Length: 154
Image (tube, rainbow, N blue to C red; front, top):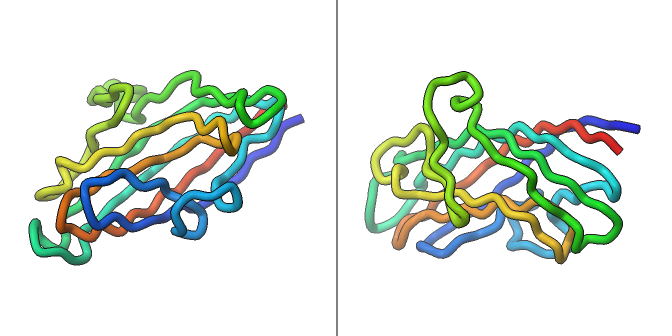
């Protein structure tokens, strides 16, 4: 059987350390990620935006945006989550390639210092979810928001 849905993730960074986006903006715990269904494959379209709202460096209003798809799967047990692929919507449309390494993606759209911020997508085997990790910059308070739409087949 299948299902579809949408959820919202959020968070705040104040330095150059990565932070996980969660449904309640509280640093990750097993209670606040969006979990994948056991024995299912999920395809997600994701839009993530960050905006500098305070800080002693950079400028309020610096921003960055990522638009991408990711496919993940989960067998039985949280530790079976895998990510099959991640690609930008621009790549699918033949416009611009998403720069993705094992650690981070550059934003497709940015203003000011936002061009240096990063997003990483990874499987989280401790919770059975797909983690979106964001990294801002030192002495910059960045507010983050993500809209995730998904379809899942089980």
